[in-house]
Length: 104
Image (tube, rainbow, N blue to C red; front, side, top):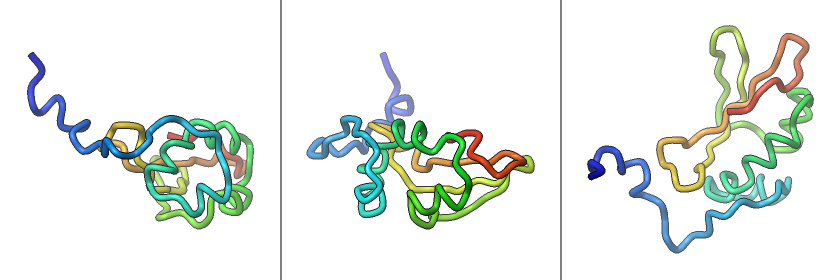
């Protein structure tokens, strides 16, 4: 039996919304809500690999916030990952040369 606590991260999925993956589209990302961004997230991560901070901001728009974790600068975009309300942000980190090194 699965406890209520174990299911809580899936309880808020909106059944009337489509959560299937979409290819990244710059305009749809910029104009989309957190669910639309979440649908494009996987492909978007592939599209930004090796890009500079300026190139990423040009593609995705201004981040919702920025942060630094363990000396790594991140752009933070609000996204709702398919069916998971516990993952509400995508962080894009940059290496010492200013290129995207990871998105999570």
